[in-house]
Length: 92
Picture: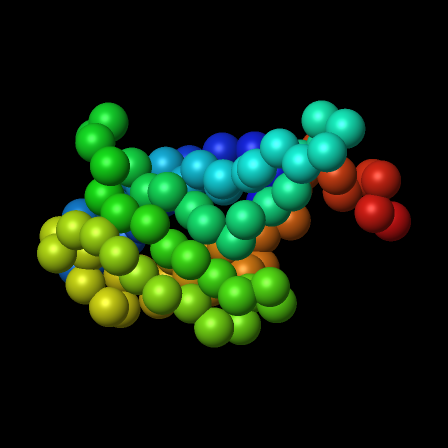
């Protein structure tokens, strides 16, 4: 994931809009490096952070109790499977 994305989460009849923002660090020469960190926002407020290892395999959640484990796991799966629309033609 390169750009922030909106994720429509369906939970027990409710629809929640979660904004997922990938965090990058600038390294030498102005290049950007993905950190494996994703900040989640809901209703304009920070809901927490998901941190992945380098392979998006192991992950850790640090954040709001308003998001239970099943909800966070759905978001983790979304991030793992996400294909950036702007990059689709480039990667083919």
